[in-house]
Length: 290
Image (cartoon, rainbow, N blue to C red; front, side):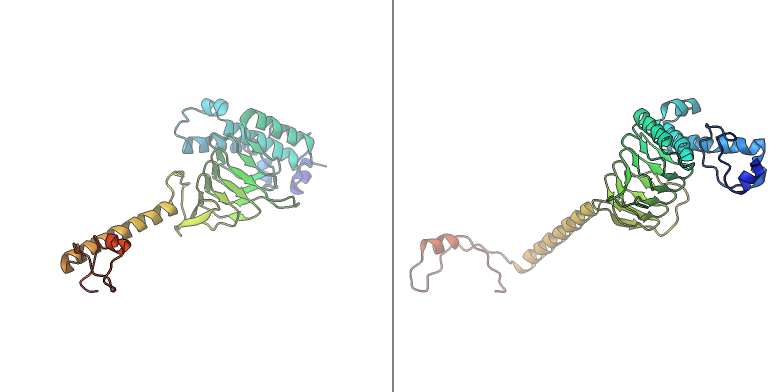
């Protein structure tokens, strides 16, 4: 079978024709990409983008060599692209071995079956887990401790689908087969177990939507530390209400002379006051309106 025939059928996957260092998923592409320039783009284009996003989102990155040698998130993505390419060729053991090697070297576990788009940035990376049927869109940012996992033991699609331009804070868990929309921000430590619409912010356990912009975000918003705190907002409202009531009470006191100190004892109906009545009437407050 010729190279062109394989390409037209979408099966240009032969190990005789494609070297192992091609880390990207090869799909059916226009025939002009069969040129030497096109193949070079397939090999290096995705890697170049993976490096570029690190400079865009991490101010600590100073040089390309630093990124290549010192960023475990970059290493994990490279290993995954190789393992995923082999996984799509119906190989089982070798992709899992590559995945385990990546886990040992980086502390990041990505199943070879996971589908990852362009521009994935895994910051720090330790403890990140991405399950087999997870789908990750473009320009997604994951911080340390993030889990994109499944629930139960069912077969088939059991992991989340993450949209584009999503930021998931440190220690967050997204569990189950549902979609997280585009331009979503998930706060650190949140547990999300149901679909999330686009352009929203989710915090808490379980995760709840606390902010819905309704306006598409052009660039990823990485400020996952500045998220609304609904509990704190409620406490502020209560404190403001208490201060308002105290002020109104003071105004009423000054206006109506509400309180007065009773210095004497009222006689009992039977002419005898019990000790409890005497103690209770030493100091009392009475309203003129009563």
